[in-house]
Length: 266
Length: 259
Ligand SMILES: Nc1ncnc2c1ncn2[C@@H]1O[C@H](COP(=O)(O)OP(=O)(O)OP(=O)(O)O)[C@@H](O)[C@H]1O
Ligand SMILES: [Mg+2]
Image 1 (cartoon, each protein chain N blue to C red):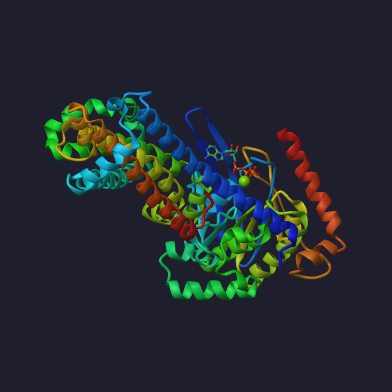
Image 2 (cartoon, helix red, strand yellow):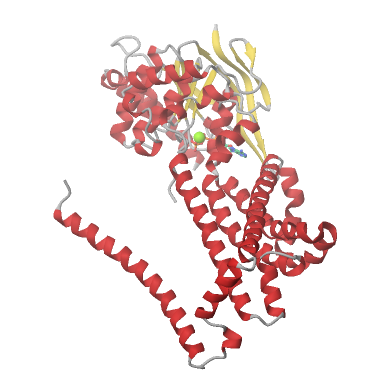
Protein backbone atom coordinates (compact mmCIF):
# COMPACT_ATOMS: atom_id res chain seq x y z
CA UNK A 1 0.00 0.00 0.00
CA UNK A 2 1.31 3.43 -0.83
CA UNK A 3 0.75 6.32 1.53
CA UNK A 4 -1.63 9.17 0.56
CA UNK A 5 1.33 11.51 0.46
CA UNK A 6 3.06 9.32 -2.10
CA UNK A 7 -0.09 9.15 -4.19
CA UNK A 8 -0.33 12.89 -4.16
CA UNK A 9 3.28 13.07 -5.28
CA UNK A 10 2.54 10.68 -8.16
CA UNK A 11 -0.51 12.75 -9.18
CA UNK A 12 1.55 15.93 -9.29
CA UNK A 13 4.28 14.26 -11.33
CA UNK A 14 1.73 12.92 -13.79
CA UNK A 15 0.14 16.33 -14.15
CA UNK A 16 3.54 17.82 -14.89
CA UNK A 17 4.12 15.31 -17.70
CA UNK A 18 0.72 16.15 -19.17
CA UNK A 19 1.47 19.84 -19.00
CA UNK A 20 4.76 19.38 -20.82
CA UNK A 21 3.14 17.31 -23.58
CA UNK A 22 0.30 19.78 -23.98
CA UNK A 23 2.66 22.75 -24.11
CA UNK A 24 4.73 21.06 -26.78
CA UNK A 25 1.65 20.66 -28.97
CA UNK A 26 0.57 24.24 -28.32
CA UNK A 27 3.92 25.59 -29.45
CA UNK A 28 3.42 23.83 -32.78
CA UNK A 29 -0.21 24.97 -33.02
CA UNK A 30 0.64 28.60 -32.27
CA UNK A 31 3.46 28.53 -34.79
CA UNK A 32 1.21 27.13 -37.53
CA UNK A 33 -1.60 29.55 -36.67
CA UNK A 34 0.69 32.56 -36.77
CA UNK A 35 2.12 31.43 -40.06
CA UNK A 36 -1.33 30.93 -41.55
CA UNK A 37 -2.63 34.28 -40.33
CA UNK A 38 0.50 36.20 -41.31
CA UNK A 39 0.28 34.86 -44.84
CA UNK A 40 -3.52 35.21 -44.99
CA UNK A 41 -3.55 38.85 -43.85
CA UNK A 42 -0.68 39.82 -46.07
CA UNK A 43 1.90 40.52 -43.32
CA UNK A 44 4.25 38.35 -45.32
CA UNK A 45 4.21 37.41 -48.97
CA UNK A 46 2.71 33.90 -49.33
CA UNK A 47 4.72 33.56 -52.56
CA UNK A 48 7.84 33.53 -50.37
CA UNK A 49 6.60 31.79 -47.25
CA UNK A 50 3.72 29.64 -48.48
CA UNK A 51 1.22 28.82 -45.72
CA UNK A 52 0.04 25.75 -43.77
CA UNK A 53 -3.34 25.37 -45.49
CA UNK A 54 -1.67 25.56 -48.89
CA UNK A 55 0.90 23.04 -47.74
CA UNK A 56 -1.84 20.66 -46.74
CA UNK A 57 -3.47 20.78 -50.14
CA UNK A 58 -0.21 20.50 -51.99
CA UNK A 59 0.74 17.63 -49.73
CA UNK A 60 -2.47 15.88 -50.78
CA UNK A 61 -1.74 16.60 -54.39
CA UNK A 62 1.88 15.51 -54.23
CA UNK A 63 1.19 12.47 -52.16
CA UNK A 64 -1.61 11.06 -54.26
CA UNK A 65 -0.83 12.25 -57.75
CA UNK A 66 2.82 13.14 -57.55
CA UNK A 67 5.50 10.97 -56.15
CA UNK A 68 6.14 12.56 -52.73
CA UNK A 69 5.87 9.27 -50.89
CA UNK A 70 8.21 7.60 -53.34
CA UNK A 71 10.79 10.36 -52.83
CA UNK A 72 10.42 10.14 -49.07
CA UNK A 73 10.84 6.38 -49.20
CA UNK A 74 14.00 6.75 -51.29
CA UNK A 75 15.55 9.25 -48.88
CA UNK A 76 14.52 7.13 -45.92
CA UNK A 77 16.06 4.01 -47.39
CA UNK A 78 19.27 5.84 -48.25
CA UNK A 79 19.46 7.12 -44.69
CA UNK A 80 18.89 3.73 -43.09
CA UNK A 81 21.46 2.07 -45.35
CA UNK A 82 23.90 4.91 -44.69
CA UNK A 83 23.47 4.56 -40.92
CA UNK A 84 23.89 0.80 -41.05
CA UNK A 85 27.02 1.01 -43.18
CA UNK A 86 28.71 3.65 -41.07
CA UNK A 87 27.82 1.91 -37.80
CA UNK A 88 29.21 -1.42 -39.00
CA UNK A 89 32.24 -0.05 -40.78
CA UNK A 90 32.94 2.51 -38.06
CA UNK A 91 32.74 -0.10 -35.31
CA UNK A 92 34.99 -2.42 -37.29
CA UNK A 93 37.59 0.33 -37.65
CA UNK A 94 37.31 1.23 -33.95
CA UNK A 95 37.90 -2.44 -33.11
CA UNK A 96 40.95 -2.43 -35.36
CA UNK A 97 42.29 0.63 -33.52
CA UNK A 98 41.74 -1.12 -30.18
CA UNK A 99 43.33 -4.29 -31.46
CA UNK A 100 46.44 -2.62 -32.73
CA UNK A 101 47.56 0.40 -30.80
CA UNK A 102 50.22 0.76 -33.48
CA UNK A 103 47.61 1.26 -36.21
CA UNK A 104 45.68 3.60 -33.95
CA UNK A 105 48.72 5.76 -33.29
CA UNK A 106 49.79 5.80 -36.92
CA UNK A 107 46.35 6.82 -38.16
CA UNK A 108 45.42 9.25 -35.39
CA UNK A 109 46.52 12.48 -37.14
CA UNK A 110 44.69 11.41 -40.30
CA UNK A 111 41.53 10.87 -38.28
CA UNK A 112 41.80 14.37 -36.85
CA UNK A 113 42.19 15.89 -40.31
CA UNK A 114 39.40 13.80 -41.81
CA UNK A 115 37.12 14.74 -38.95
CA UNK A 116 37.75 18.43 -39.49
CA UNK A 117 37.43 18.28 -43.28
CA UNK A 118 34.00 19.45 -44.50
CA UNK A 119 32.79 16.26 -46.14
CA UNK A 120 30.51 18.21 -48.49
CA UNK A 121 33.64 19.24 -50.35
CA UNK A 122 34.04 15.62 -51.40
CA UNK A 123 30.71 15.70 -53.24
CA UNK A 124 32.06 16.05 -56.79
CA UNK A 125 34.59 13.28 -56.17
CA UNK A 126 31.87 10.90 -55.02
CA UNK A 127 29.77 11.91 -58.02
CA UNK A 128 32.53 11.08 -60.45
CA UNK A 129 33.63 7.89 -58.72
CA UNK A 130 30.31 6.42 -57.69
CA UNK A 131 27.78 7.80 -60.17
CA UNK A 132 24.61 9.69 -59.36
CA UNK A 133 22.86 7.20 -57.09
CA UNK A 134 25.74 5.63 -55.14
CA UNK A 135 27.40 8.97 -54.51
CA UNK A 136 24.57 9.70 -52.06
CA UNK A 137 25.58 6.73 -49.93
CA UNK A 138 29.18 7.93 -50.23
CA UNK A 139 28.22 11.31 -48.85
CA UNK A 140 26.00 9.87 -46.09
CA UNK A 141 28.70 7.48 -44.90
CA UNK A 142 31.48 10.05 -45.21
CA UNK A 143 29.65 12.45 -42.93
CA UNK A 144 28.81 9.95 -40.20
CA UNK A 145 31.60 7.39 -40.18
CA UNK A 146 34.38 9.44 -38.64
CA UNK A 147 32.17 10.46 -35.73
CA UNK A 148 31.16 6.82 -35.33
CA UNK A 149 34.77 5.71 -35.11
CA UNK A 150 35.65 8.42 -32.63
CA UNK A 151 32.63 7.82 -30.40
CA UNK A 152 32.88 4.03 -30.37
CA UNK A 153 36.63 4.18 -29.78
CA UNK A 154 36.26 6.56 -26.85
CA UNK A 155 33.62 4.19 -25.49
CA UNK A 156 36.15 1.35 -25.67
CA UNK A 157 38.65 3.49 -23.80
CA UNK A 158 36.19 4.26 -21.03
CA UNK A 159 35.74 0.59 -20.24
CA UNK A 160 37.73 0.13 -17.12
CA UNK A 161 41.17 -1.37 -17.67
CA UNK A 162 40.60 -3.62 -14.68
CA UNK A 163 37.62 -5.33 -16.33
CA UNK A 164 40.01 -6.35 -19.07
CA UNK A 165 42.58 -7.29 -16.45
CA UNK A 166 40.03 -9.62 -14.95
CA UNK A 167 39.59 -11.22 -18.38
CA UNK A 168 43.37 -11.44 -18.68
CA UNK A 169 43.63 -13.15 -15.30
CA UNK A 170 41.54 -15.97 -16.73
CA UNK A 171 43.82 -16.07 -19.76
CA UNK A 172 41.32 -14.51 -22.20
CA UNK A 173 42.34 -13.92 -25.80
CA UNK A 174 41.65 -10.65 -27.64
CA UNK A 175 38.61 -11.98 -29.52
CA UNK A 176 37.20 -13.18 -26.19
CA UNK A 177 37.75 -9.75 -24.62
CA UNK A 178 36.05 -8.17 -27.60
CA UNK A 179 33.04 -10.45 -27.50
CA UNK A 180 32.60 -10.73 -23.74
CA UNK A 181 33.52 -7.23 -22.56
CA UNK A 182 34.12 -4.58 -25.20
CA UNK A 183 31.00 -5.07 -27.30
CA UNK A 184 28.44 -5.63 -24.53
CA UNK A 185 29.95 -2.84 -22.41
CA UNK A 186 29.71 -0.49 -25.39
CA UNK A 187 25.99 -0.92 -26.01
CA UNK A 188 25.16 2.46 -24.39
CA UNK A 189 27.79 4.07 -26.62
CA UNK A 190 26.40 2.37 -29.71
CA UNK A 191 22.97 3.80 -28.94
CA UNK A 192 24.37 7.28 -28.33
CA UNK A 193 26.31 7.04 -31.59
CA UNK A 194 23.19 5.90 -33.40
CA UNK A 195 21.33 8.98 -32.18
CA UNK A 196 24.02 11.28 -33.49
CA UNK A 197 24.16 9.33 -36.75
CA UNK A 198 20.45 9.68 -37.51
CA UNK A 199 20.96 13.44 -37.76
CA UNK A 200 24.32 13.34 -39.50
CA UNK A 201 23.34 10.73 -42.06
CA UNK A 202 20.22 12.68 -42.98
CA UNK A 203 22.45 15.70 -43.62
CA UNK A 204 24.66 13.51 -45.79
CA UNK A 205 21.75 12.10 -47.76
CA UNK A 206 20.18 15.51 -48.42
CA UNK A 207 23.56 17.00 -49.36
CA UNK A 208 24.18 14.09 -51.69
CA UNK A 209 20.77 14.53 -53.27
CA UNK A 210 21.33 18.27 -53.68
CA UNK A 211 24.48 17.55 -55.61
CA UNK A 212 23.62 14.72 -57.84
CA UNK A 213 20.40 12.87 -57.57
CA UNK A 214 17.30 12.48 -59.65
CA UNK A 215 15.15 11.41 -56.72
CA UNK A 216 14.65 11.86 -53.00
CA UNK A 217 13.57 14.74 -50.79
CA UNK A 218 16.82 16.65 -51.32
CA UNK A 219 16.18 16.54 -55.05
CA UNK A 220 12.59 17.77 -54.55
CA UNK A 221 13.80 20.68 -52.43
CA UNK A 222 16.38 21.77 -54.99
CA UNK A 223 13.91 21.31 -57.82
CA UNK A 224 11.19 23.22 -55.95
CA UNK A 225 13.66 26.05 -55.36
CA UNK A 226 14.63 26.20 -59.02
CA UNK A 227 11.04 26.38 -60.29
CA UNK A 228 10.09 28.75 -57.44
CA UNK A 229 7.57 26.34 -55.94
CA UNK A 230 7.67 27.21 -52.23
CA UNK A 231 4.89 24.70 -51.51
CA UNK A 232 7.01 21.87 -52.83
CA UNK A 233 10.02 23.01 -50.84
CA UNK A 234 8.06 23.36 -47.61
CA UNK A 235 6.23 20.06 -48.00
CA UNK A 236 9.52 18.29 -48.63
CA UNK A 237 11.08 19.88 -45.56
CA UNK A 238 8.09 18.80 -43.51
CA UNK A 239 8.51 15.26 -44.79
CA UNK A 240 12.20 15.40 -43.81
CA UNK A 241 11.20 16.43 -40.31
CA UNK A 242 8.71 13.55 -40.16
CA UNK A 243 11.37 11.15 -41.41
CA UNK A 244 13.76 12.16 -38.67
CA UNK A 245 11.02 11.83 -36.07
CA UNK A 246 10.33 8.29 -37.24
CA UNK A 247 14.03 7.36 -37.23
CA UNK A 248 14.51 8.77 -33.74
CA UNK A 249 11.47 6.80 -32.68
CA UNK A 250 13.11 3.59 -33.85
CA UNK A 251 16.34 4.40 -32.06
CA UNK A 252 14.34 5.14 -28.94
CA UNK A 253 12.63 1.74 -29.11
CA UNK A 254 15.98 0.07 -29.67
CA UNK A 255 17.36 1.87 -26.65
CA UNK A 256 14.51 0.69 -24.44
CA UNK A 257 15.06 -2.87 -25.62
CA UNK A 258 18.84 -2.68 -25.13
CA UNK A 259 18.49 -1.19 -21.69
CA UNK A 260 16.39 -4.13 -20.61
CA UNK A 261 18.61 -6.70 -22.25
CA UNK A 262 21.96 -5.28 -21.18
CA UNK A 263 20.77 -3.90 -17.91
CA UNK A 264 22.27 -0.43 -17.99
CA UNK A 265 21.17 2.98 -16.79
CA UNK A 266 20.91 5.85 -19.23
CA UNK B 1 57.19 -30.57 -2.37
CA UNK B 2 56.41 -26.92 -2.73
CA UNK B 3 53.53 -26.02 -4.97
CA UNK B 4 54.75 -22.50 -5.78
CA UNK B 5 58.47 -21.91 -5.98
CA UNK B 6 60.09 -18.52 -6.62
CA UNK B 7 63.86 -18.51 -7.08
CA UNK B 8 65.84 -15.25 -7.18
CA UNK B 9 62.93 -13.46 -8.79
CA UNK B 10 63.38 -9.84 -9.78
CA UNK B 11 61.13 -7.54 -11.73
CA UNK B 12 61.63 -4.10 -13.21
CA UNK B 13 59.03 -2.03 -14.99
CA UNK B 14 60.24 -0.09 -17.99
CA UNK B 15 58.57 3.09 -19.17
CA UNK B 16 59.88 5.81 -21.47
CA UNK B 17 60.50 8.06 -18.47
CA UNK B 18 62.19 5.62 -16.12
CA UNK B 19 62.99 2.17 -14.95
CA UNK B 20 61.32 1.02 -11.73
CA UNK B 21 62.84 -1.90 -9.92
CA UNK B 22 59.87 -3.31 -8.05
CA UNK B 23 61.12 -6.66 -6.80
CA UNK B 24 64.60 -7.98 -6.10
CA UNK B 25 65.86 -11.40 -5.05
CA UNK B 26 62.57 -12.93 -4.02
CA UNK B 27 62.92 -16.49 -2.81
CA UNK B 28 59.75 -18.09 -1.59
CA UNK B 29 58.20 -21.49 -1.54
CA UNK B 30 54.58 -22.13 -0.72
CA UNK B 31 53.28 -25.56 0.20
CA UNK B 32 50.16 -27.18 -1.10
CA UNK B 33 47.11 -26.11 0.92
CA UNK B 34 48.98 -23.35 2.68
CA UNK B 35 47.55 -19.88 3.34
CA UNK B 36 50.12 -17.11 3.16
CA UNK B 37 49.56 -13.38 3.64
CA UNK B 38 51.72 -10.65 2.22
CA UNK B 39 52.03 -7.25 3.89
CA UNK B 40 54.29 -4.35 3.09
CA UNK B 41 54.33 -0.60 2.44
CA UNK B 42 52.18 0.76 -0.37
CA UNK B 43 53.82 0.50 -3.77
CA UNK B 44 56.36 -2.09 -2.66
CA UNK B 45 55.32 -4.60 -5.29
CA UNK B 46 52.76 -6.88 -3.66
CA UNK B 47 50.34 -6.78 -6.60
CA UNK B 48 53.31 -7.21 -8.90
CA UNK B 49 54.26 -10.39 -7.06
CA UNK B 50 50.75 -11.80 -7.52
CA UNK B 51 50.79 -10.92 -11.22
CA UNK B 52 54.06 -12.78 -11.54
CA UNK B 53 52.66 -15.91 -9.90
CA UNK B 54 49.53 -15.69 -12.05
CA UNK B 55 51.65 -15.59 -15.19
CA UNK B 56 50.32 -12.23 -16.36
CA UNK B 57 53.82 -10.77 -15.95
CA UNK B 58 57.17 -12.34 -16.76
CA UNK B 59 60.02 -11.89 -14.26
CA UNK B 60 62.98 -9.83 -15.42
CA UNK B 61 65.25 -12.30 -13.66
CA UNK B 62 64.91 -15.58 -11.79
CA UNK B 63 62.29 -18.23 -12.24
CA UNK B 64 58.83 -19.11 -11.03
CA UNK B 65 57.54 -22.65 -10.91
CA UNK B 66 54.14 -24.10 -10.12
CA UNK B 67 54.04 -27.81 -9.37
CA UNK B 68 57.57 -28.09 -10.71
CA UNK B 69 56.81 -26.55 -14.12
CA UNK B 70 58.01 -23.09 -15.13
CA UNK B 71 55.19 -20.56 -15.42
CA UNK B 72 54.62 -19.38 -18.97
CA UNK B 73 51.45 -17.37 -19.44
CA UNK B 74 48.24 -17.52 -17.47
CA UNK B 75 47.75 -20.96 -16.00
CA UNK B 76 44.35 -22.56 -15.40
CA UNK B 77 45.73 -23.73 -12.06
CA UNK B 78 45.68 -20.17 -10.77
CA UNK B 79 42.65 -18.09 -9.83
CA UNK B 80 43.31 -14.39 -9.37
CA UNK B 81 40.81 -12.36 -7.39
CA UNK B 82 41.34 -8.68 -8.01
CA UNK B 83 40.71 -5.85 -5.61
CA UNK B 84 37.48 -4.79 -7.28
CA UNK B 85 34.84 -7.34 -8.09
CA UNK B 86 34.33 -6.18 -11.71
CA UNK B 87 31.09 -8.00 -12.14
CA UNK B 88 29.70 -7.38 -15.63
CA UNK B 89 26.45 -5.41 -15.33
CA UNK B 90 25.16 -6.88 -18.57
CA UNK B 91 25.20 -10.39 -17.15
CA UNK B 92 23.20 -11.72 -14.22
CA UNK B 93 24.96 -13.24 -11.23
CA UNK B 94 24.94 -16.76 -12.60
CA UNK B 95 26.36 -15.73 -15.96
CA UNK B 96 29.01 -13.66 -14.23
CA UNK B 97 30.11 -16.74 -12.36
CA UNK B 98 30.73 -18.69 -15.53
CA UNK B 99 32.93 -16.04 -17.18
CA UNK B 100 36.17 -17.82 -16.30
CA UNK B 101 34.81 -21.20 -17.33
CA UNK B 102 33.66 -19.68 -20.63
CA UNK B 103 37.06 -18.16 -21.36
CA UNK B 104 38.75 -21.44 -20.63
CA UNK B 105 36.22 -23.30 -22.76
CA UNK B 106 35.17 -25.54 -19.91
CA UNK B 107 31.86 -27.40 -20.11
CA UNK B 108 29.08 -24.81 -19.66
CA UNK B 109 26.61 -27.17 -18.03
CA UNK B 110 29.09 -28.34 -15.42
CA UNK B 111 30.24 -24.78 -14.72
CA UNK B 112 26.63 -23.66 -14.27
CA UNK B 113 25.83 -26.49 -11.91
CA UNK B 114 28.95 -25.81 -9.93
CA UNK B 115 28.16 -22.08 -9.76
CA UNK B 116 24.64 -22.75 -8.52
CA UNK B 117 25.88 -25.20 -5.94
CA UNK B 118 28.45 -22.72 -4.59
CA UNK B 119 25.88 -19.90 -4.57
CA UNK B 120 23.57 -22.09 -2.56
CA UNK B 121 26.29 -23.17 -0.19
CA UNK B 122 27.48 -19.64 0.47
CA UNK B 123 24.08 -18.16 1.06
CA UNK B 124 23.41 -16.50 -2.28
CA UNK B 125 21.12 -19.14 -3.75
CA UNK B 126 18.26 -16.72 -4.31
CA UNK B 127 20.35 -14.25 -6.27
CA UNK B 128 21.44 -16.32 -9.27
CA UNK B 129 19.21 -14.38 -11.65
CA UNK B 130 19.60 -10.95 -10.11
CA UNK B 131 21.73 -8.26 -11.70
CA UNK B 132 25.02 -7.37 -10.00
CA UNK B 133 23.65 -3.92 -9.12
CA UNK B 134 21.09 -5.56 -6.86
CA UNK B 135 23.79 -6.99 -4.57
CA UNK B 136 25.48 -5.38 -1.59
CA UNK B 137 29.24 -4.83 -1.55
CA UNK B 138 29.87 -7.92 0.56
CA UNK B 139 27.66 -10.06 -1.66
CA UNK B 140 29.45 -8.83 -4.77
CA UNK B 141 32.78 -9.74 -3.24
CA UNK B 142 31.50 -13.23 -2.42
CA UNK B 143 30.25 -13.59 -6.00
CA UNK B 144 33.70 -12.57 -7.25
CA UNK B 145 35.25 -15.27 -5.08
CA UNK B 146 32.82 -17.87 -6.39
CA UNK B 147 33.57 -16.74 -9.95
CA UNK B 148 37.22 -17.50 -9.25
CA UNK B 149 36.34 -20.88 -7.72
CA UNK B 150 34.08 -21.95 -10.59
CA UNK B 151 37.14 -21.99 -12.87
CA UNK B 152 38.55 -24.63 -10.48
CA UNK B 153 41.97 -23.24 -9.66
CA UNK B 154 44.31 -25.01 -7.22
CA UNK B 155 45.87 -21.74 -6.18
CA UNK B 156 44.00 -18.59 -5.18
CA UNK B 157 45.64 -15.19 -5.41
CA UNK B 158 43.70 -12.58 -3.46
CA UNK B 159 44.67 -8.93 -3.94
CA UNK B 160 43.09 -6.87 -1.16
CA UNK B 161 39.76 -8.58 -1.72
CA UNK B 162 38.05 -6.87 1.23
CA UNK B 163 39.44 -3.37 1.04
CA UNK B 164 36.25 -1.86 -0.38
CA UNK B 165 34.13 -3.12 2.51
CA UNK B 166 33.17 -1.74 5.90
CA UNK B 167 34.86 -3.18 8.97
CA UNK B 168 32.02 -5.44 10.08
CA UNK B 169 31.50 -6.95 6.63
CA UNK B 170 35.24 -7.47 6.32
CA UNK B 171 35.40 -9.48 9.51
CA UNK B 172 32.44 -11.67 8.58
CA UNK B 173 33.56 -12.13 5.02
CA UNK B 174 37.17 -12.93 5.87
CA UNK B 175 35.86 -15.58 8.24
CA UNK B 176 33.65 -17.01 5.47
CA UNK B 177 36.34 -16.85 2.83
CA UNK B 178 38.78 -18.57 5.16
CA UNK B 179 36.38 -21.48 5.57
CA UNK B 180 35.56 -21.62 1.87
CA UNK B 181 39.24 -21.80 0.97
CA UNK B 182 40.07 -24.33 3.66
CA UNK B 183 37.20 -26.66 2.88
CA UNK B 184 38.11 -26.59 -0.79
CA UNK B 185 41.71 -27.38 0.13
CA UNK B 186 43.12 -24.53 -1.96
CA UNK B 187 46.48 -22.88 -1.65
CA UNK B 188 46.01 -19.16 -1.07
CA UNK B 189 48.13 -16.02 -1.28
CA UNK B 190 46.48 -12.96 0.26
CA UNK B 191 47.71 -9.41 -0.13
CA UNK B 192 46.29 -7.01 2.42
CA UNK B 193 46.98 -3.74 4.22
CA UNK B 194 45.13 -4.94 7.28
CA UNK B 195 47.61 -6.63 9.56
CA UNK B 196 45.02 -8.30 11.77
CA UNK B 197 43.41 -9.76 8.66
CA UNK B 198 46.81 -10.98 7.46
CA UNK B 199 47.60 -12.68 10.77
CA UNK B 200 44.19 -14.12 11.47
CA UNK B 201 43.71 -15.73 8.07
CA UNK B 202 47.17 -17.07 7.28
CA UNK B 203 49.55 -19.82 8.27
CA UNK B 204 52.46 -17.54 7.47
CA UNK B 205 52.75 -13.77 7.09
CA UNK B 206 55.37 -12.43 4.73
CA UNK B 207 56.61 -8.90 5.29
CA UNK B 208 58.11 -7.02 2.37
CA UNK B 209 60.49 -4.10 2.53
CA UNK B 210 60.12 -0.90 0.59
CA UNK B 211 61.10 -0.73 -3.05
CA UNK B 212 63.17 -2.37 -4.51
CA UNK B 213 61.37 -4.92 -2.47
CA UNK B 214 62.77 -8.00 -0.90
CA UNK B 215 61.30 -10.34 1.65
CA UNK B 216 62.11 -8.80 4.98
CA UNK B 217 60.83 -11.66 7.09
CA UNK B 218 58.37 -14.52 7.11
CA UNK B 219 56.45 -15.08 10.33
CA UNK B 220 54.99 -18.47 11.18
CA UNK B 221 51.60 -17.92 12.76
CA UNK B 222 51.29 -20.57 15.42
CA UNK B 223 49.38 -20.37 18.65
CA UNK B 224 49.18 -22.67 21.65
CA UNK B 225 45.44 -23.06 21.08
CA UNK B 226 46.04 -25.47 18.20
CA UNK B 227 46.45 -25.89 14.46
CA UNK B 228 44.25 -24.43 11.71
CA UNK B 229 42.38 -21.97 13.91
CA UNK B 230 39.71 -19.86 12.24
CA UNK B 231 40.29 -16.08 12.06
CA UNK B 232 37.98 -15.46 15.06
CA UNK B 233 39.79 -18.04 17.16
CA UNK B 234 43.17 -16.64 16.19
CA UNK B 235 42.20 -13.14 17.18
CA UNK B 236 41.24 -14.49 20.58
CA UNK B 237 44.37 -16.59 20.96
CA UNK B 238 46.77 -15.74 23.78
CA UNK B 239 49.79 -15.05 21.59
CA UNK B 240 47.92 -12.94 19.07
CA UNK B 241 48.86 -9.53 20.38
CA UNK B 242 52.50 -10.40 20.73
CA UNK B 243 52.64 -11.60 17.14
CA UNK B 244 50.71 -8.54 15.98
CA UNK B 245 53.09 -6.18 17.75
CA UNK B 246 56.18 -7.92 16.43
CA UNK B 247 55.03 -7.72 12.81
CA UNK B 248 53.70 -4.20 13.29
CA UNK B 249 57.09 -3.00 14.52
CA UNK B 250 58.84 -4.55 11.59
CA UNK B 251 56.34 -3.13 9.13
CA UNK B 252 56.52 0.30 10.69
CA UNK B 253 60.23 0.55 10.02
CA UNK B 254 59.65 -0.09 6.32
CA UNK B 255 56.69 2.24 6.10
CA UNK B 256 58.55 5.04 7.84
CA UNK B 257 61.56 4.41 5.65
CA UNK B 258 59.41 4.72 2.54
CA UNK B 259 57.93 8.10 3.52
N1 LIG C 1 52.52 -1.16 -15.24
C1 LIG C 1 53.47 -0.51 -14.52
N2 LIG C 1 54.38 0.26 -15.16
C2 LIG C 1 55.33 0.91 -14.45
N3 LIG C 1 55.48 0.84 -13.12
C3 LIG C 1 54.59 0.10 -12.43
C4 LIG C 1 53.54 -0.62 -13.10
N4 LIG C 1 52.81 -1.27 -12.17
C5 LIG C 1 53.39 -0.98 -10.98
N5 LIG C 1 54.45 -0.16 -11.14
C6 LIG C 1 55.32 0.31 -10.06
O1 LIG C 1 55.84 -0.81 -9.39
C7 LIG C 1 55.80 -0.62 -7.98
C8 LIG C 1 55.01 -1.75 -7.34
O2 LIG C 1 53.65 -1.68 -7.71
P1 LIG C 1 52.55 -2.64 -7.09
O3 LIG C 1 51.27 -2.29 -7.71
O4 LIG C 1 53.00 -4.04 -7.23
O5 LIG C 1 52.57 -2.21 -5.56
P2 LIG C 1 51.67 -2.72 -4.36
O6 LIG C 1 52.57 -3.23 -3.33
O7 LIG C 1 50.61 -3.64 -4.83
O8 LIG C 1 51.03 -1.36 -3.86
P3 LIG C 1 49.65 -1.14 -3.14
O9 LIG C 1 49.82 -1.67 -1.77
O10 LIG C 1 49.50 0.35 -3.14
O11 LIG C 1 48.60 -1.85 -3.93
C9 LIG C 1 55.18 0.75 -7.75
O12 LIG C 1 56.22 1.64 -7.43
C10 LIG C 1 54.54 1.11 -9.05
O13 LIG C 1 54.71 2.49 -9.27
MG1 LIG D 1 48.47 -3.50 -5.02
